[in-house]
Amino acid sequence: MKLVSRYTDIAEQFSIVDRPSPVGEPSLLLFNEAVAKQLSIDVSSEQQAAVFSGNQIDSTVAPVALGYSGHQFGHFSPRLGDGRAHLLGAVADQQGLLWDIQLKGSGATPFSRGGDGRCAIGPAIREYIMSEAMHALGVPTTRCLAVVATGETVYRQPPQPGAIVTRVASSHIRVGSFQYLATQGDVKGLKALADLAITRHYPHIQSSGPERYLAFLREVIKKQIELVVSWMRVGFIHGVMNTDNTLISGETIDYGPCAMMNSFDFDTVFSSIDRQGRYAFGNQPNIANWNCARLAESLMPLINEDDEQAVALLSPLINSFAEKFNHAFTEMWAQKLGLDGHDLQDSKLVAELLALLKDNSLDYTNTFDSLTKSLKEDIPIPSVLSSWSEKWVQRTHKQSYSIMRKANPMLIPRNYMVEKILKDFAESNHSPILSEYLQALQNPYTQSINESWNNPASDEKGYQTFCGT
Image (tube, rainbow, N blue to C red; front, side, top):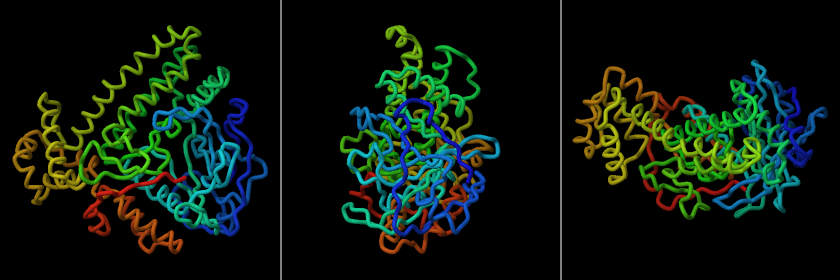
C-alpha cells in the first residue's frame, strides 16, 4: 500500500504527527475486497491485521491527527479534532485521485480531551454495515476497508471488546476544518485548505480571487442538497449532523447514532443524544442549510476584507438553499412515484400520501416498494391508499416502473437486523448471518435473499442509537 502525505502543509496544528497506540492481539474481522481492488491496496492477508490495527506503520509517511472545530447540537467547540483517529496517509486510484486511509479507534491523540481513543466493536461493525448499505443504495458515503478486533476490552457501559475501523474517504475536509482555521484567524491556511478542496472535489472551478471561493461554496451547497435528498429518499436519519460531521465533498461520514426510518414520520428521531429532535428526519434539510451558513462565515476572509461586503456576497448563496432544495426534493418525489412530467397538483398528491403514511403508521420502504410493484404485478397495496392510488395511477406513464424501481429500494439495513449482528459480534466476534446479509444489501433494488429481511420490526417504540464514543 503506497501512501502519500496529506494535509501536512495547510497550517501549523492542522495536522499533528501522532502514532496509533499498539494493541495486544489484533485479528481481522472484516475486509472489503471491492474497495481494496478499486484502490489497488495490496496488503497481504498475513499483514492486514497488523497494518489495519496501526501496529505496523509505513516508515515513509507519518500518521497524523487532524484538527477541526464543530457546532455540536448548535454549541460551538473551537478545538475538537481527531480524538480517536489517525490518518495513515492517502492512496491514489487508477485515475490518480487521492483517497484518505484513516484508522478510527486507534488510540488517544493530542485532540482526545481525556478520552481513551478507542472504539467498541459495535460501532465499528455498524459503520461497516451502514456505509456498505448506503453505497449500494446510491447514497454518497465514506467506505470501510477493514475492521480489526484489538483483543482488548473497551470500558464503556457495559465493557465491550475493542475494534478499529479503517475508513476510506475522498477527503476528510469538513465544515469544521474551515471553522478551525477561521477561529484562529489563519487566512493563509483557509486559502490553502479551500484550494486543496477545490483541486480534489471541484477541479472545474478555474476562477480566481473571491469568485473562486464563492463558486466553491455554491458547489458545496449543491452537494449537501444532493446528499440530504438521497438520505430522505431511502429513509436515512444521520442523527448527529454537527459541522464536524459535514464533509465538503457531500459524502456521508460518522455512522454513530444513525438509523433507518420504518413508519413514516418527519419527526422520527432515534439518537439518544438528540433530545430536542434537532436532527430529526424532517429537520435534516434545515440543518444542512445551517451548516452551509457556518461554512460561509468561515470563508468570509477569502471573499472580502470588509465583513459587510463579504456577507453581501455570501448571503445570496445561503439564501438560495431553500429554493434549490425544494426543487431537488420535488424531483425526488416525482421519481419515487413515477410521475409523468410536472403538474401543479403533484405537491398535493404527495402531501396526501405522506399524511396517509403518517396517520396509518405505514412502513416507508415497503409502501413505496409495493406501489412500484403494483405497476407490474397484481399485488395488494395498503387498503388505506386505495382512493389515493386511483389519482396517482393517472399521473404515471410507460416509464414509471423503471424510474420508481431505481428510486425505491426493496431492502434497507433494518435497525433490528443491524442490532442483532452487533449483539453477535459483542458476544463472539462473529455473526453467522453477516456475510449473507451484506450480500443482500449489495442489491437493494432487487429481491433480497431472505424476504423476511424486508420486514420492519414489529415494534421499535423506545429504540435508541448511541454515539460511537
